[in-house]
Length: 216
Length: 216
Image 1: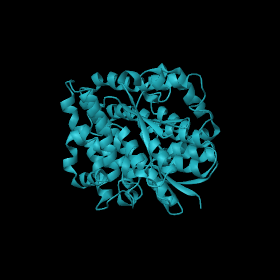
Image 2: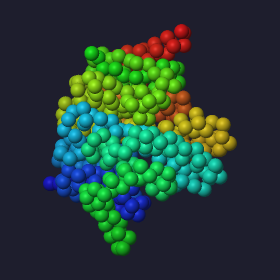
Image 3: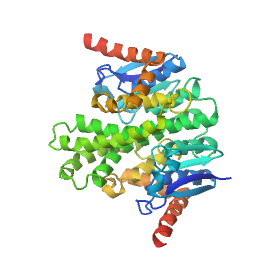
Image 4: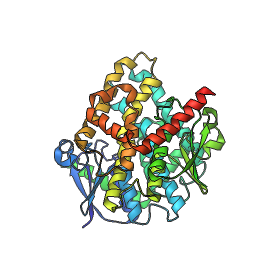
């Protein structure tokens, strides 16, 4: 039986592929493995049945042969370890790819999440307009560094890997902010990720869920 | 030759073991492997020589036999894969431990970093006092969930693993906030981590750097 992942029944990103199931869908497509999707409502996310799989009430989760995982980074890494296509065969290159997976979620994503909180959760607060420049500057610092590192390279470390999958999906969350307009090199890097056939199949699959849900 | 890691020459935590080299030091002690430490000044962190190893100008980094890694989570995972003592031998238990490592850095740590930014970077801003309750509530949400999951268990998933090492070190960053006083179960979990002999050796080693630096 194919592995089963969970995704939002009604994704707040309206099919833009910003929800974290996109990372896992893309990983399945890169390794060419089938997967089933179980859609979860916002209410069900917070109920005991889902919390038994993910104590934090989030998507995505992963289930296969009695193994339950959560955290998109961990699921992508699990797939990369089981199937060729996401992690380099060379041990050192593989370790470096994992370093970049952690950099995506622990160095690049936190300031992006802070901006998201400011825009979504603190939108109506008096201070938000004044705070935003400094919040954005914290992201710019990381984008400056990432940009300098990438230079004219296509991918983070040699061939495309799970590192790029994680980094591209983290960076895509900046889409609504306009910040990527300031970084044409990073925008081109994201576009290279989005151009991969595996990405496109994953994007189409999550968009179909949104379109079916909104049309029903 | 032993592996070499980097740490702050003058740690801003003044020897409290909150800097991220503590995670890597603790991991080395759990697996019983020697390591060398190269201390880096704040100026040197941002210079090309260090950025060649970590493009984001952070500590810790890891170097062994020509392999360079950064990101504490990735280095701890690398050690866990190479030596027994940090990851369970059973494949499913190992995958779950890695899930919890990612949960520590990508679900628990981001709201803690947001609080740290508010307290350190935005301390003098007029809005900070008004913002802090909501910022702390975002952390409480995660601590409530973690607390409910942990229940009366000693560790996150069976025996102590790299998952607990990462989670305990992430949670310790809350020390100055006073939030842990509200969560005696989590405080006890952290104390169990701190009681491990490997933790204590690592803590003493990083404290010695601070004491030598401040006494010199």
